[in-house]
Length: 455
Image (cartoon, rainbow, N blue to C red; front, side):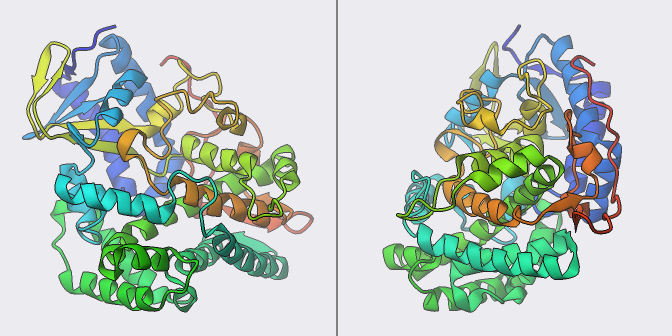
């Protein structure tokens, strides 16, 4: 193996653009485009990308791959030790405020910690960690947060029992009521306009620098958030941040929290699909007690199921970093501004490294195998890993266990009931029915052929 990055040929660069980066951009890095994600599942684009990257990694003996896109130069990691160096070396010399990310997130969260300059990050990161209780499996306000989950899950279960059906729109409406309640309080529970404005700005964000800013729309979002922050009750993230750091400080971070919780909803829905197709998984979920008598339980297995969902179908398609200073890598030196990329789906399903690459294996998150592998980064890693990991997993796992009480059959269950699992899954197309009733129609059927270990 070699550690000196190699420049791809013009033809190889074209293949990476067509088979790896192009589908990633087409699906939407900030908010998924329904038609593009359905197309991606039909084509199983992650399988195609993996085959190409396997060939290039083998051809260049495991060296990082350098892709030139005009004046922009991206270095693609190909081994877990590359991932470790990039993530441990963040925020300097590898800043998370990459050129692409600043362009995308600037549409709706220009003051978010993720794209903050170094001096602002030094203040905002500790503020985020304190409000989100980063180090604690169960948040300080866990009772109130999980109570919101329980209320909405109960209503969702009743809705599904009455209709006999569950789809993404129904689940997402319930999930967003949870999110608005735990982040902004009961007054925000039904504020669907807030999410509509955020989604419009996120769709702009899909185009990064190539879509003009709409400052009037962002101002409308900020006003709406500020109104909810002012009246947020104790037990919400907004109140915790407001009382600790002031209303303005917490208001600036809330758009990113909402953005992150949206991805968590998708991961939970995919985990529910696998559990519905596999009775053994569902039975184990239902066997976990949701309370310890002193507060909400950690739910290790349910957390493992959510983490497996993100491993198998990453919600962050690529982890991006930019060099803040010249970076010496092997025999080469890259100037400040060079981009470094970790393609999550490639590392998360690497059969050369993982015996469970295409299998649903929540146990890997319980026995330490997954945490010991720098290639498995469902919430990023290193000093700038997601500060909301634990609070997200708390809400997602409690939602999963409660909704799994429904005896559901998923429309594409024949693909999810066994390993290997399809590399690409469009959660927007999932359809569920109650077992014993008319089964939901197959939405978009992925080809069940597994990817080869070596292409």
